[in-house]
Image (cartoon, rainbow, N blue to C red; front, side, top):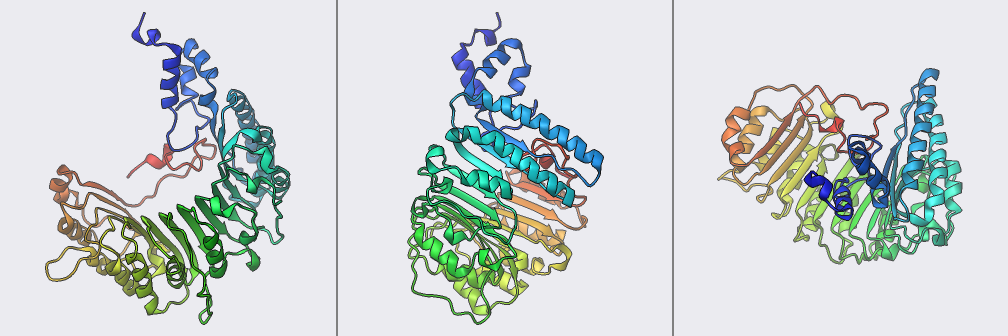
Length: 472
């Protein structure tokens, strides 16, 4: 008898559980556990099907049709197939707490109509298991909202994390004060879309540890303003991670100054701001009584900014003695503002990520900005403790400038990851080989971009899908 066959079933079950993805839910694919385990032999299949914990994690990717009737028919068949598999999957989960994520990606008007029906079908499948919901991520339609709003906090006693994506509508969804959003163990809440006034959500704000509010609606009352964000943050005393999408402030708008945020546990603060991202971010940061941020992110777009706001923002970040990681969207800043921000970042920053969304229209992330980070004997260097630099959407930084920067920051620089929106000018890797041999990790990617995502991939919505692992 082979050594594998002599392993006790309880030990083998623990090995099977260790094969599951560590940071996401399992997909409906024979390329990974738990489905793969059942394809090895009949005894493994029997054991896998009788181990509930193997089936307590599930990712459901909704198929997306194009405008052709043939595509809709194929997607309808694929949806029915996935719902059947999901039903069998959940049926094997016993009494285990469930972690389920549902991903949708709508491209056309006909896809949107199909997608609404698909979301309702998935929700109908999941609701009978509500008493075992633990971590749930769902896109929901207007009819789906009605179904979800009928659940009470007693119906979801195990619910720890809830992520909802709602349609962008002008009407407002009303949530019961004793409904699912008031679940006693709910500590992580994410919301994106319309139909909700964020401050009116009946959440247990003071027990939330993770909060993400990204309302996007044509109804301005449903958008998150600077004042509303301040009010919400002042109620969240246990927050450790926070993501907010804020519409910004008018040029001469006077903001309240008498509110203090008592969130000393906050470690990750990610802001997506429009109109005035710098003023908005510095305004919120300067209302914290105590800052212990480890990660800070600022993305969005700017209509106008006062130069003094940069100084106020960097002054607030300097108050964070443990700040290690900063993510900046270059489009938010002018070249001068971006250079000033980098110079003003605290010396504790070890990881800096900068990216551009506008691509060729953006002129902020260039050689001059990179030079601020370049070690030089005759001037102070930005982010002296930098160990990781990630740049995305780069077209103005030259290969030669990148080479000079990398050489100047070695050997302390440990990771350089750059995605260009232009063709390669010079192959700089041979000149960096000695640093690579010493442990520097380098990834330089040039067009063409990654291939289109397969339409029916069960990995849709997951960052570690086989498609996303390709490199040029």
